[in-house]
Amino acid sequence: MARTEQERWDTALHEAAHAVAYLVGGIGVLRVTIRGWGNQHMQINGKVVRARVCPEQAPEYIVALLAGSLGPMLGGLELDHPDADGGWSDRDKAYDIITWTNLGMSQQDRVNLMFTYYHQAAELLAKHRAWVLRVALALMANTTLSGKDVVALRPADI
Image (cartoon, rainbow, N blue to C red):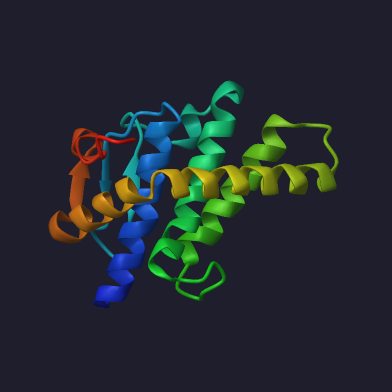
């Protein structure tokens, strides 16, 4: 099934937000792509992302996951939009990691922590909006970028 240009743009914003948030959080990015329907992915250090997360990295990883789910909002897509499917799985992963790294914490405390990480992700995107948009535009033109490409797109004033 062919994607519309709007779907490609929303995916580019989603993946660009992940890439920028990972880099800001000190997590290396090997590549980011919007190639394929249902195959949009980002490889971090060439490994499965979750297998590489340790408790010390969990906050940065969670913020990066949530930044991806918020990324399409930079282009006007609402968070609960039916096309924002990737965001739902990212939020599920984030909550799982919160649970995994905070055993014994009440469910309400985990939900509160999730909102704290959402706020951090929104702040990160606001601060790095120009970078996310540059990466998304480059993904629209090239489909796949290396981590070095993403770093090179960082505005000088950030």
